[in-house]
Image (cartoon, rainbow, N blue to C red; front, side, top):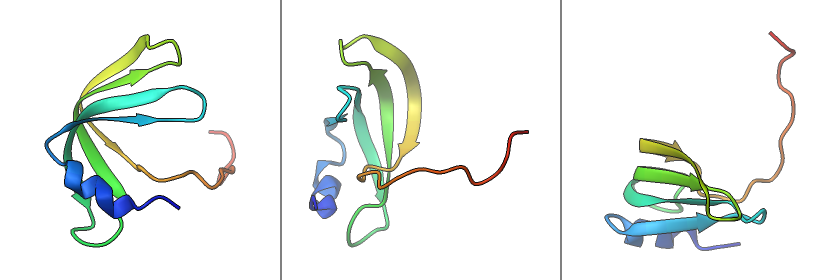
Length: 80
């Protein structure tokens, strides 16, 4: 398991998070939560989402995200 506490050391730096599909999330790490211990939540400023060919798919002034490994996903409610 990665040491998520090290993410906090990157605050104010431009960072890139790479995913197994080749997609990337890049931007300036603005903040992390909680204040101590492993990072469970972070905010990127000037964020960009890139596909595996480095094409920009979306840009955000500020983007909250979870910088941890995804364990799974499921439906928690039916369609609207």
